[in-house]
Image (cartoon, rainbow, N blue to C red; front, side):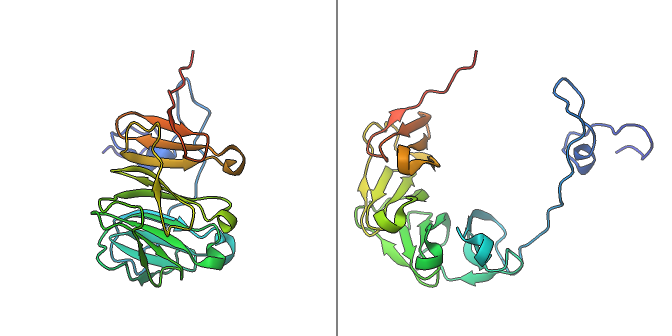
Length: 232
């Protein structure tokens, strides 16, 4: 590296702290980058720092609760200042999906998808215990994402994107599942997103491994390829 001085900083191949605080020049320049608060380590008692899933309670502003998962499962009730380790479902060593019910503060419901073909599980007591969800799901399920209906309290509807066998719907909170892949030509799903106005427009997006983006406008009953928009 070069010596400190009053001149401009020499660009570095890696993005360092000096570059983040240096005004950007060029045709897209809008002046110095805004300063941001520094990141602070909040690993606490977490012993496995390789994590894939973070899930916030929908009432986080009031209950300060969040979950951290991958090779282990932890919960914090004080905005990540401290963590407690929770028992994972029997036979599970890796967690690939973790989603909290929109009614979590009342029903304590969490859906968990395990890696290595270990299946799907549900907790009704904030992660203290788990029950397997097998009805309608193949033994080879590799869950990637769960989504709860925004009206889950009344319709008990949950969606699952699987990395082997496509899209599934449950209308009873996960007790039973049914595949819903009409029009979905690639069943290896790597992404699933719900419209913020889902209750009105019933729109879901699914990202596939080889055929790009698919869209459903009927709550996942049917799918069609969503071609990328070309800008002119």
